[in-house]
Length: 453
Ligand code: F0G
Image (tube, rainbow, N blue to C red; front, side, top):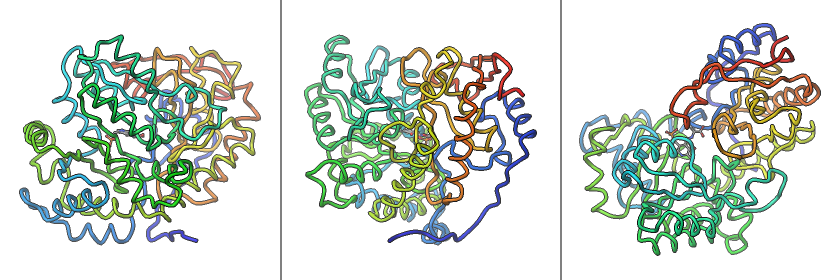
């Protein structure tokens, strides 16, 4: 049995329903525009929102704030080497900073990037460099009701098909996002990682792993890939990352810190080539975008991330939220992912057309019923695709307790009971670029109903 006890607390308050409705209207029916004080249980993201351990807080006090040659950077290098097996580290302020440094160098106009599924900032960085992001998820991933072990995998046949269509010479990188955040937090198998490596070798391009949630992924590998049943999370993580030339990391996830990120590399020539971009956009190579104390906290966090007991407790908590929601009749994406429960809003609101943003309607209804903040990952976040209408309930690490999970399940249960009364939404503003519009778009209900009563 392993758990954590609270070493620090923060108050949260459930506003009266009237006030929640008013706040929602003021926010343009987009909970990204809500103040955190108006949110009771915040499941918007697992990114930078978790609680740090007392060892991490202790490390913060030892941060070396030197501009050049910081000891805290050396500690981060050692942690990345021990945990992930990479020699070179370029620190950045968060994951997208690492994406900017890497993809701005790797990509040129007309290139193509293959990915099991691009996360939104990855997609935006690829597009911003004039390249085309091509998603190659496995077919089974698009069926929220199908229980399969590795729905996060890259579809190799689809990827090879895309290569012959685009022309092999246009492909600049193969990327694996583990776990596959835009595909319901589903894991990628080590076998699939090996196959992706072969594809990258055939194309003579780098294999990049977006390793934001690498330990949760390793936990699923141990549960589901028989060859690894007796391996530790730490061993599996190192094995899986050993296939990559380069890791893009957001420390805000499984660096278990509130800010930070990095690129991890093997090739000294690539390190040299990336340095000018790192200095220009992030900072000097021994701090990147981070304070020394943040690097120190992340170094400890990375080691804690691969503690088998921590990952099991984490993934079990997410699964238990999924179970509670299912008990209330909420259609949950199967199987439950590593960092979040994804709800199939298309199935729940079968009376709403895709053009009426059923996912965003569910996000709004969940806030209205229980002050619960979640995020849409359907037709609002991914315009022009035919992806399922998913809503993500991401659990911050080491933060919420059973009583919060019960509250969330109850709020969603109320939405299920009143599902017919939930109206769809329409856009009032549709900001550019399309890949990032869901962060700031404003909407309104198309009809009176639960959201507007
Ligand atoms: N890659 C993946 C797979 C991510 O999930 C994220 C962030 C990033 C890259 C970018 O990292 O935020 O540190 O710049 N995902 C967060 C989320 C924001 O809510 O899923 P970042």
